[in-house]
Amino acid sequence: MTRISPHYKRVILKLSGEALQGSQSHGIDHSILLSIARQVKEVRGLGVEIALVLGGGNIFRGQENSASKGLGMDRSVADYMGMLATVINGMALQDVLEKMHMPTRVMTAIEMERIAEPYIRRRAIRHLEKGRVVIFVAGTGNPYFTTDTAAALRAMEINADALLKATKVDGVYSADPMKVKNAKKFDRLQYIDVLKKRLKVMDSTAISLCMDNKLPIVVFNINRQGNIKRVVMGKRVGTIVG
Image (cartoon, rainbow, N blue to C red):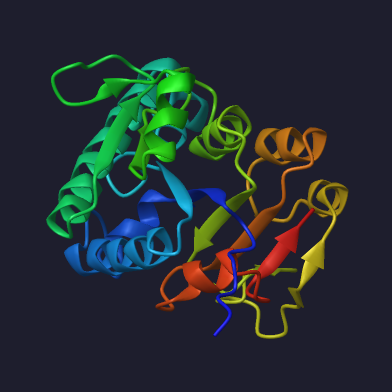
């Protein structure tokens, strides 16, 4: 029997902090971590090299707590606090992955050598080549840049074949499908359409970076078990931007 090869051999999976909190109002839902870990293990078993970029919104959102929102906190301070929240999420996911016997490395844009490796591009690529799951945390290490932009940047740096954007819905819609009954789902989109229509896929900096470097983005529902495998095998899942 002929084995079908994965469509994407090396991918970045972008997970928001909100995805990790599940139905809770904040924090980390352990059942969600287990579900994600099982899917990562399934994909890794196909020989796919996978790295993850995590958000921190389930713990702290820099933009929402900054002075620009009238809450008095300096934007840079708020963003650094958000970066530290991503480290907490990364450590939690690492613990679950390793309990499933997957070798992992947490790599951080802000040095904290006791709990994570500093991000070094060549070392990250070497980890992937050796079959390790790499978890990128602390965003880009700079305020004013989102973890979406960090995901796009890391994807370019490690020469990923695609950026997988995990969400709570099954693709990109013309409006929020949770609020608008007749919202239209898109199967395919051009980068420029996302920017022009201001669709909430990723922030404009991340979309522009992917557009300039012709990196496909696949937006899909992380809560449906097996979806990561379906995406890397090239099956039609969610929305493809590119």
